[in-house]
Amino acid sequence: MKNLLNKAIAIIALSAVFTACTNDEAAISGTGNLGVEFDNSFAGNDLILSTQPNITSNDEVLKIEKIKYIISNIVLTTAEGTVFTYPKNKSYFIIDESNPKSLIAKLENIPAGNYTKIKFGIGVDKAQWELGATGQGDFLLEAQAAGMMWSWSAGYKFIAFEGMFTAPTVSDETSFMIHTGQTGTDYNYTEVTLDLPSKAIVRSSISPIIHVITDLSKVIDGTNKIKLSDNNKGGMGAMIMGGATLPLITQNISNMFTVDHVHND
Amino acid sequence: MKNKIIVVFLFAFQCAVANVEVDSVSNFAFQKMEFFTDFDFDCDACGCSASGGSMGYSSMLNSNFVGLRYFKQSYTSKDGIFANSPWIDENFNTLQIWSKIPLGKKVQLSALIPYHFHDRALTAGTESIKGLGDASVIVSYSIYKTQKEEALFVHDLQLGGGIKIPTGKFEEANNAGTVNQSFQLGTGSWDYLLVGEYVVKKESLGLNTMLNYNFKTKNQKNYQFGNQFNYGSTLFYLLDYNALKIVPQIGVAGEVFESNKQYGEKLANTSGDVLFSKFGVEVGKEKLSIGINAMLPISQNLSNGNMEANYRWSINLNYVL
Image (tube, rainbow over the protein chains, first blue to last red):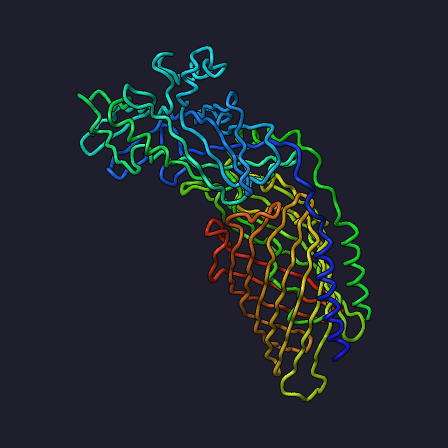
């Protein structure tokens, strides 16, 4: 019996030995790539364009045909508090549900590190816009091609959210269009900071993807509840592109992003 | 003594090969990202067992045997992270050489060599994998065994340790999009097992209780499946018709999983537990026996509810040693 006990101890001791065999991590240096994936959804459901009825708390039913938004000025922070600001001239991305390739903002040459926080803007910041048309680089053409500009003087559309809706008071399918951007009184650019649920481990050999869920229900059904039917002037469709409602929507969209998880592949 | 030597040898071998290089620079990182979007894969969530861990390593009829066992595990899991993400069916099929060979009076060697053929019905089409799985070798030692023939209760307590060798292929891509992280032929890692089994018999009635714990290590892709605890208890009854022995059996079996990790970071929705009821029968004639078992879940919480075990069943043909 005692002999056996010795054997058991030997086995346990050996288990301790082999756990010590695993190799340690190499020193953190160099650069790597990182993707920020935007996964559009509506109140917990994956977004399906055009066909899927999406219901708000005001019993309005939205069929979303188009959703595009500009993501900009990405800033990453490591666990140690080191801040990395992605080069501003490369930090503008148009996320378009109808174009799967656009759903991942691809960042290159990120210093290797363990990132725990991401900050980004929705829209184009005023300082950038004030650089004038020549200061925009290629992004101006890109935004024009994507229909994310009104005109140079009117500026960028930060978010374009369009489709058809019905409401308790609107029985026929009616179009809606929500475009945010600057108005005479408000600039409406907003930024969000999100904590990552686990580290994004950037290395030359590891390209993490931060998987962000965008809950589009928040656009009109967030902190501020906005009825499309209230904006359906003369039954011609609900058009929200300016006025006092726009800052409310801007406040809403700053709360529509969450990080679901991080892949380190 | 022999078992100790084997164990030492296996552990030493593991240390020698564990020091693998991390993958060289991935130039294809962004192509990979495009791959994700092109196929609209959502991301990983769960990791639960395809090992059939709580199915046990023993026959109720014969303590020593070599045999062939087929088992099927049916799961349904969510292909995505949203409420409206589709549920897909996953079928895990395993053909396994299993054995429990005596090495002297008190020491026994269990060897398990699986061949897997799995499929799952993804929205984009059915995906299949097949090939050799991870082989396991377990050495167990009979700590206590009732020797007296006329004893009312006959006890047999065995403790052992083992190793699971990464003979099965681990494909990182299989974990790229979907919930069930166990859609793999192997874990890609050297894993270690601690096994305990206790059998008590009174005349024709017996109770077999087994516990085993799987320590899983990091594989070359820096992916580490969560440690797994398996347990089970089976009540069996021997109907002895001289030439023919029939052993009906009924019991419970459970599995508890810790979270999977990648680069040391815990992956969300990969832990879980499941408890099965199990029932079956073994029939033995001379040196041959045949067994059929079925398992149905009693309660489960796999992958935060994003995965459901439906059933398992197995059939085996053994040759008694």
